[in-house]
Amino acid sequence: MIEIREMQSSDVEAALRIRLEWLSAQFDVTETTVLVESWFARYPGNEAAPALVAEDGDRIVGYLLCALTTNPTQVGRAAEIDEICVTKSYRRRGIGTRLMDTLRQRLQNTVDDLTVIQARTDRANKPAQAFLRALGFEHCTLEFTDYLE
Image 1: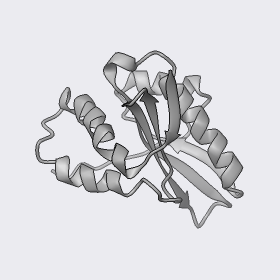
Image 2: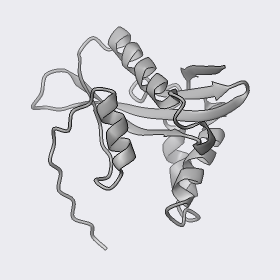
Image 3: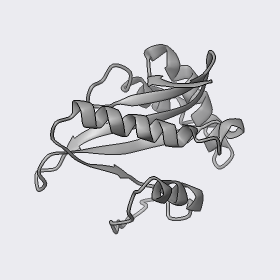
Image 4: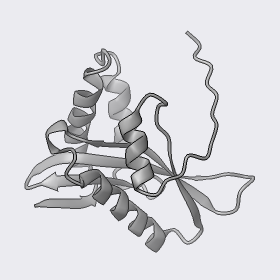
């Protein structure tokens, strides 16, 4: 049975493996491992960066990383989904939905001035877009990026 719980420091390595499994199918990830490791390490125990894991027995099979932010032009705080990933063999079982639902519930219970939950994805990532729409997210921003290569 899949359990959703807060990420702990001891979960970071397993979550990193899931991320690298996903990324390595698309990119060469050998040079990014150390950077990603330090990025992941900031989540466990950080109230401003809630993180959850999905666990099947003693195996981490998914995770969700989030950051609470403030915007000087808006009232209240926003929760930005930094990343959500489920290992390939566990996808399409509702685990991502459970991660998002658990996060939404916890944020609503603990962050008094939360006004919005936001998520970004690449324009080409149609499955992620469909997933977010199914969860009730609306496509509402136009973002421009200048890739400096």
